[in-house]
Amino acid sequence: MQPIELTILGAGSSAGTPVVGCNCQTCMSTNPKNKRTRCSSLIKLGTGEHILIDTSPDLRFQSLRESIPRIDAVLYTHTHADHLHGIDDLRAFCQLHKIQIPIFGKKEALDHIALKFGYALIEPKGFWEMPVLKAMPIQEPFSLFNELVVPIPVMHGKLEIYGYRIGNLAYLTDVSHIPENSMKLLEGLDILLLDCLRIKEHHTHINLEQSLMFANQIKAKKTYLIHMTHDLEYESLKKELPDHIDVGYDGLKITIN
Image (spheres, rainbow, N blue to C red):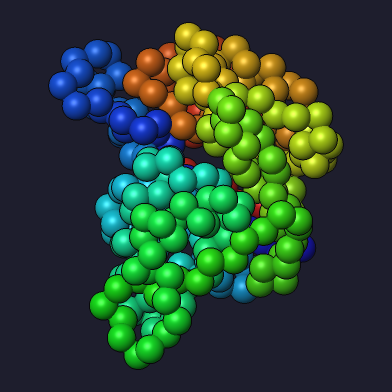
């Protein structure tokens, strides 16, 4: 397995943090680790390819902040607005490198993208002023840049969506339940990024208590909490967690050799 570097582009929920109009402790914090853009991550392979997980509405800002040089593929977990609506910002990478970018996900998710952003799903014609993307529906594990990508079915309320595993790294956002068959796909992880919406229970996301329960069941060597609302303040939450669980934040880089 080649080295992998994951960058958390956004650790926030659909509203981001600070929340518009909110004066709570987290939103008013000067700690940069409490400034959360919408949820997304970037995987850089040892061979140089960059795999994006979801296109958040903050993709342009995230790309500038992290100096992302290229996007070679996108893995979509699902197509709610906070995970999809930055798709048009892929045009910059298509234009820069004159490439068509493959996007992977459930067939239903890609059909939804085609319905909303059909103009972007085109074959290269030498015109790069729009995104030039190719839909690649998946159900089974597949090879991407010589790495095995394993889709992990999880429930997001009543909707089945995908998490992903690459090597000993797994990414699970917008989770309300992890089926037993999917738990088996998460054995032997070094790194797990795991949904953790807030303190109170929610009908389409696991809360802090449930996140810790799943983290302890999965037993990754290290778990990072993501997709957090302003209910969770970085320093306060970090003090509550055991050593093998940590709080994700925008810009965090995690390397797996």
